Image 1: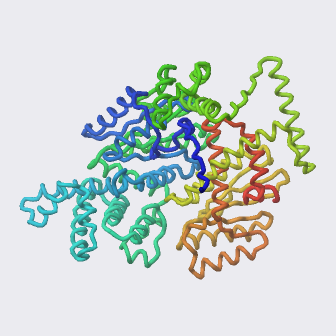
Image 2 (image 1 turned 90 degrees about the vertical axis):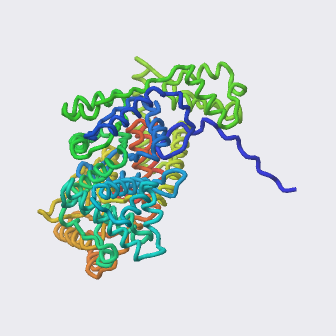
Image 3 (image 1 turned 180 degrees about the horizontal axis):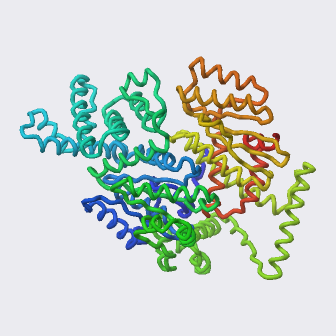
Length: 628
């Protein structure tokens, strides 16, 4: 008889956080039901407003209060009608709009549950259908074909994709889509004028019109501001505009187009999450506030939600201009800590979903401890510990002793002494760790493994990799490591010529390295690497590293390949490919740092850095700042 591996009991409290609103977690809808009803009413008011003026909403709650969870509930209920656009914290003050737009595009390609269509397909199908229907209604004597198409789209706006996107009759498909494109552009021109906005609208029409994945990918490439090759231009009839407008201007224009198209559909729901870390970069914080004001000015028909800790919003509201504060906080929804009775109802509800009777497992004294948690997440984490203790015999985690007064001063001195001992060990290359250090390292390793698992999953997803976003990640990592490595940062200039996104790092010995990214291709790649090489030639006392993501399009042109060859042959330059392992380690370090800054993770940052230096000693960034 074969041995059957016994399946472990599923811990109903094992997952205590929602990372994004497109996830699926157990949801007790009676919890924060009044706040949820109010949030939905705000969206409905925007929809009913004839001016479709955008409104700001602050959702205020302590770490683990359920802010992102509430947005997940909103997504489940509204994603069939409204577009849910989730935007994590920007990291580069020079590219806030592009960061917002890139995260919007990533959200728009999320599938609408129980359908084969994405959010962007829903938005465009509804908008273009309504524009076409209204155009036919305004015609004095529309032809029978126009009336037939109008009836088809009135029946189901997704027929725009189901029936007009068919390959069965290519000639008929092209003719129908030419009619859609013509009327949509005429509507846009008469309503909003021409220019870049019209080009964006045309690209969206073409995205819907192509049934094949390959040409849709070309349009998607154009829509995220990348340069098209001559072949790609012939395939789509789109025109390159990235040399006529900056990426920031393009991003704001494209977001504006989405907002104006949504007037034909339903309000967009923009959700800004994990913004607490902005406090660590004053320039980024101020630029974020200014750009948010621009969003309210240029983007109609949106509810713009900001998730904040109460004290952090109070801090930001004292920094931002009053006009920004008023727009952002038109409505404030507070998520206060639920009562112990509500917490217990939540625990029983979650347990029941996993066919677990929590009352028969945990004792009264267990609940006395569990329900004293300071937040929903804290209560769930405590419940998870007690479930494992009672069900599987896993010991409860040791409580960290808190000191005050004189004891606290002793503790601080002991911490300094431990730090000095750690430095001595590191200097002498002694690997031995104390029991406390080993326990701490083991715990942090567990977190790192979880972050690595998530990064591996994300690597295969549709994510927009951009130079500005990557250099922002490096900047945040370097700022975190500054004290440990005694570093400083700056930028290099070359007049008005465009360089790859980069950061210049100087150590205590005045040794300089420049780290840069160039994921774009075409003429833009060629011109920027050429400019980069000029700097390399003119600055022999600095080491230059140019990175390109492995998933970026391969470089084929002779001119670009020659520039790469020159860079690699120089004494102080190097072109490197960022492979999967390189990317995963970069994302893990960046994510764990920002999660600590955003109080999503309650771990000492210095301890994390120590473990990362130990476990990731082959990570390319650490090797650069260690050896140069």
